[in-house]
Image (cartoon, rainbow, N blue to C red; front, side, top):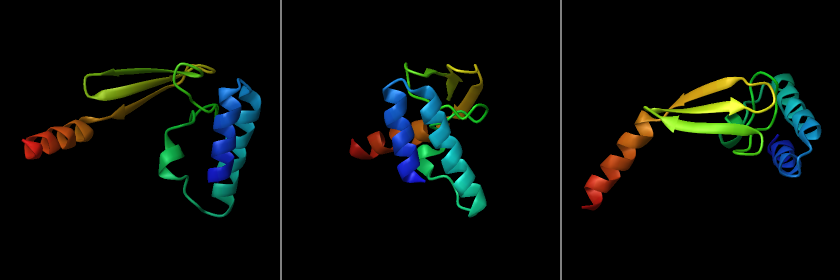
Length: 99
């Protein structure tokens, strides 16, 4: 699965969106067939609606604000929102420990 996601990333960088989408679909189908989870680094890297591989400023728009990250797919316009409060707290705690 990781190999297919890496291939999808390279194809998306070269603006071959259909091939990148196909690689993502294959990886997800293999994962479902063998009951294997999508690896964590790749979990947020594709659109859950159209399976397009999301690259910032190439195939996705990313906005940060008010405790969440908003990722908008460039192909279908689907919006995914991810919280990041925990990351903010962890960063603040590590800074406090460093001082």
